[in-house]
Length: 213
Image (cartoon, rainbow, N blue to C red; front, side, top):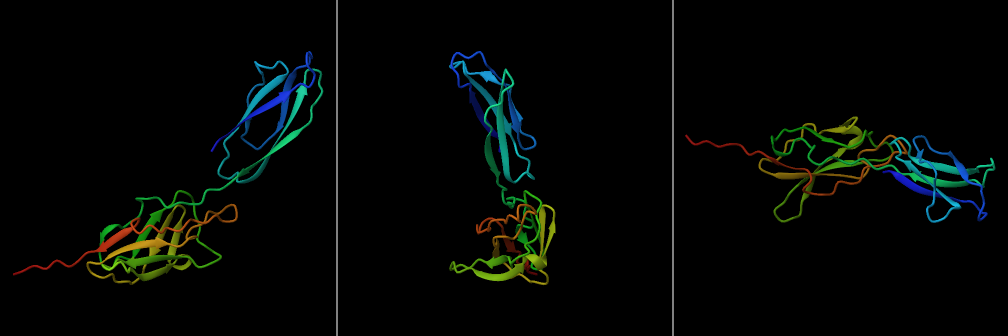
C-alpha cells in the first residue's frame, strides 16, 4: 500500500519576513516529497507532502526525519517518524489447483499455486490432509502428507506426491492444509494460513463403466 503524509511546518514569529525554503529529509529509498507550499489560511505555515510505496523487500522498521530550513539559512528542530512495513503471508490461489473434479483411482500428483515465492516449512511438521466425505457428515482423514518430505516447492507452486495411494471408486474427497505449509523466505519466514474450507479443493474418484452384452 502507499503512504501519503501531510507535513506541516510553522514559522514561530508572526508578521515575520522569514520563510521556509526547504525541508531536509532523511527517508527510506523510494520515498518522494512534494514542493513546499504556503498554507492559504496562515501565512506562517508551510505544507509539504511525502509519498511512499514500499517494495516487497522493504519490510521492517523505517524512519523518516525532517528538518526545516528558513530563508536566512537557519535550521529548525528535527522531527522523526517511524514506519513499520509488514509482510503479507503467502496465499493459495483459488482455481489454480490441479486436478479437480473427476480423477482416476491412482492419481498421485497434485499441484497448487501461490501468490508469492515460497519455501517449505523447516521448524515443525505441517501436513496436507486428504479427507473422504461421508454421508453421515463424519468425514474421515484418509491421508496425511508431510509438506517437508512429500511436497516439491517450485517458486510459486507446490507439487504434492501421494505415492501409491489408491482412492476409493466413486468416493468424494477434499483437501485441507495446516498452517505453515508454505513460508516466504523473508522477515523470519511468514507462514501461510491454514486452508480449512472443505469446498476449496474437492475431487471425486471415477467409477468403472459397466457394459452389458
